[in-house]
Length: 255
Image 1: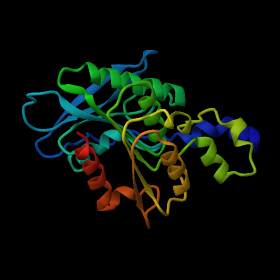
Image 2: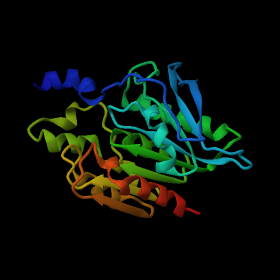
Image 3: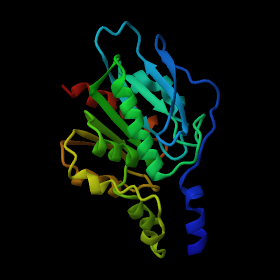
Image 4: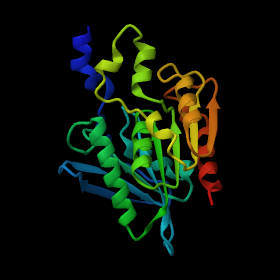
């Protein structure tokens, strides 16, 4: 069993999703196709959703990193509802959508840094108002990006302190700490992070229990806001109308 889990852990952790049709934007918004090469040459693909109107000053921008079974360009149509009139960068992980390669912790974090730097170089986007949002697996990517590059704030949906802790809660009889290659130890970075953070998690989440989000929030070095949605689990949080409104309100409160 141990050998099987060691060999199969990538397939158990990552569930690459194909592109299902062309992404759509909110009314009046435009979608710019994004294609860039990672540091090792792997092609990454996604979209940049831009709000309507001429940009007289550089726009605030949100970088979104999804869960382990998300094709993130499908979220472009919800950009305004979730983030207000901010640009939203949605680029798929390696092996997801039209991105090449295979996913892995170090590669995904390196790609996130490359995406941050790409956005920060654009004249129409404001690097001083760049926020990151990570959901589930993407929370581990978002935290490591925030530790490596300056970001204005962090939104974490269904986050965890480390995948080792999550694994141990599901498989207490397995040597999870020895087996996991992709550890996403967010709590190692949390105390040094000073930017504001919003934690949104489900009170009935059986995949990543609320205690994991609460331990990470308790360790965070900057101001923290929490929204626990009782009665909601891991995959249905965005069905609660408070989910999107809380994220938009959090971003609007930042000076």
